[in-house]
Image: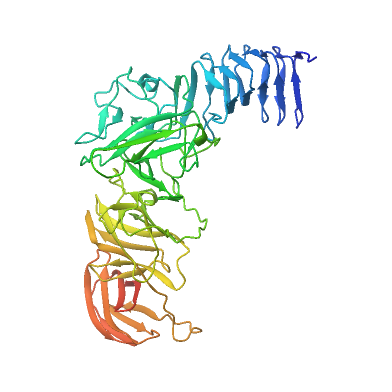
Length: 581
């Protein structure tokens, strides 16, 4: 027969490392202190805490039939388990900092909170076969920053009023929006009325204003569980373009790549996240993820609780009707997934067997201003848009960040572009769009598994210059604001070697002073071509025909400054950046 465990000492440290204790009931009296380190407590009756209970690991398990969780102390549990056959009611304020697993029945009773901090957010384990009933509160920590975030509700019938403490719902300019795909103009629609329902699987945009302090969003309701479904549309509108704002409906992260639990009928395989800007509360940037490829190296397949995101309903015979449905197998126990609010710079170096190139464009001196495009290889890909492999480009709304994207053979604008292979015949047209003038840095952030013997070039059709991105990862160019279509492209050429591999000389070298250039060319194969001098505005200042290898002395009569000198032939391209005084 199990006895009740009474902990009544004025100071009691109960160190559970790593064994377990079980009892008919657990009572921690006022003045008693309990510290549980990596051990387990199991109770077959009530758990009452009127003292202090600190759980640094392990689990507290309710294994009886009818039980209560109560006490005058607000207890924070690292992990709370409700076993099959147990009916447990929370009768006083309690908190969970980690995982709640219910294989029985837990009535939160309006007294249970899932905590969120800068390091992790508590969750309800979706593998549980039991239920969680009654109102429960869930938190979402937001790091310092301002502006819009895309949210969703993990509850069945919460309302917009849940955001009243952190979002000004009475502002003259609305701060809370739903997204309606069928609208001919902007899909954003005011949804600020406090009684409006936050529908499961639906995404919403909340503007947290100009205050940059960290925030804590709290939503209360009955948690969503089991199978949920939403009907989505693509009505071929000129603004919404078939995009639908959806959201994670569970009090736990979900895995977009889960092998079971998803229904994605007439839905492309990419997901799209929004990160608010750092200079304006009304702007931001988009990132995307598809087929284990991230546009920015941050977006991934794990979607945080309360996270809103875009999906695209596939094009077809309009209007296209789609179904997005999910069930508990897609839920995962990840306490620290990315919640997209303010982007971070990340450059993962994990190699994959396929070729992957990540090229970004941004304003010089502003590392947060870069916008990436990813090109990768997949055997089943085509050169056109592939709904299971490619991510469509969603344009950034931040004028401090350019838009860089590729153009597929069917003219689709892409942020992630899959190709069947990459060779010397591959040309990837790029479009750069800038809202302000400035010095643009093109940065090849990742080169993974480029075929042996190939180099990747950034080609400028206007100037004829070509930057070897495999040798010099960053290329800078002064550009006025505007849209640059048809000017830039990524190209691939064979790797060139010097005649004497032991020579310390460059096969293409440039020096200069007093307006004069000295150009040295020593290519393995004699080539005629053009020597081109451009400034950082991309303006061609000088062009001259050269006849093969040799040393050339050339008068340019240009002012002091930084220039790009290129030798362009029919089979190779070589470029150098120099300072002329």
